[in-house]
Image 1 (cartoon, rainbow, N blue to C red):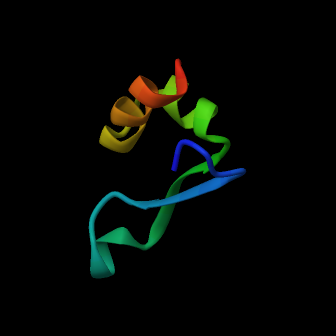
Image 2 (cartoon, rainbow, N blue to C red):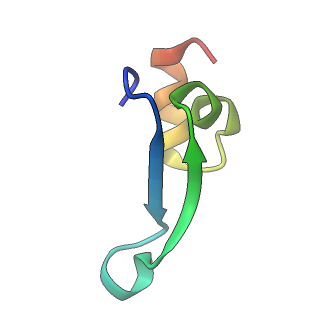
Length: 48
């Protein structure tokens, strides 16, 4: 994910619970956001 051009992050759950987009943008932006667990972990890899 850290090397992707763009990320579309569905969530927050799976199946019927994951039907909305919680983030759309660059890996650096997701890492800086940190409102999701994915963003928090990605921040370590993109220097956010």
